[in-house]
Structures are given as structure tokens and as C-alpha cells.
Image (cartoon, rainbow, N blue to C red; front, side):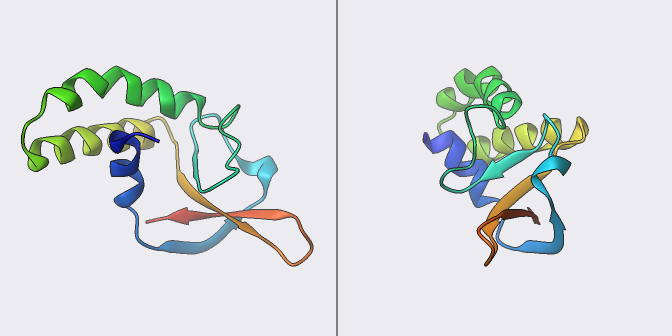
Length: 100
């Protein structure tokens, strides 16, 4: 995980209590955490991040890097994407909670 990816993840410090089943995920949703299904779930997120990566790497100031991260978040949300944390239930299945 690159510094750029961690920047987006660090924007979120809590989760809404709304939970989503795996079948409720959309192609624009971003799933955080280990085993988050990045092979198929975060494809659009990675593509969006890649489109801003060179701009981010050229930034010298933290405030400028944060501005780029905010652009990525706005673009994902503009497409209807949500930022979700994955939680394992006692039954062994997973639910997703919206990060905020």
C-alpha cells in the first residue's frame, strides 16, 4: 500500500452503523482492511488513484497532498461510491460499514 492509498484511508476515523451485505456492494465502493477483496472490489478506486498519482508525487507540501487525496474521495463519492470497513460477524460471514 502506497503513501497515497494510506492518505485516503486515514481520512476516515469512524463508521456509520448502517451495515451492508456483500451483495449490496457496487463497483464504485471502496473496501478498507485486510482481505478486502481488492482483486475485484477496489478496481475503480485503484484506477482513480492512479490517475492522480503523478500530481500527488510532485507535491512538496502535506497540504497539497491532502488536496489531491480529497479530489480522489470526491471523485469516488461523485460516482456513488462509498468507503466501507469490513467486519466479520460471529457467524463467519461479513458485513460492511460506511466509514466517515
